[in-house]
Image 1: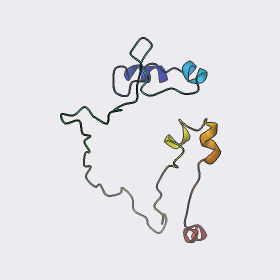
Image 2: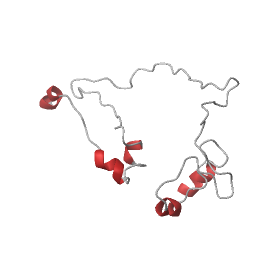
Image 3: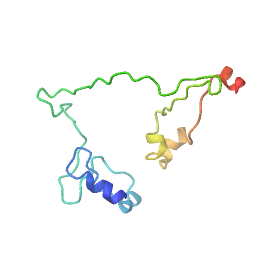
Length: 120
């Protein structure tokens, strides 16, 4: 599945077609994007801070508000959200094997107000 996924990224901004399980296992890190062997070396995206728009400026899209599908009630009184720590990305799926990063945040955790914890 991974091989199919990286093949789908070939030639796109998010090109990862040069990645494989072997390459990830054998190297200490890979610069993204990572095109297939023989393609021009990948460089950091937008190093000159110019984006592929007519004036070179980034665009932000507005997303309309959508109310929550479920609201807290007596049976389920808390609203839970997910977040991240500064040292990890994607709930550690991409950074969890880095000794440097896990030294500061070694595992997922939950934070809760003491009043909510006492009521649980």
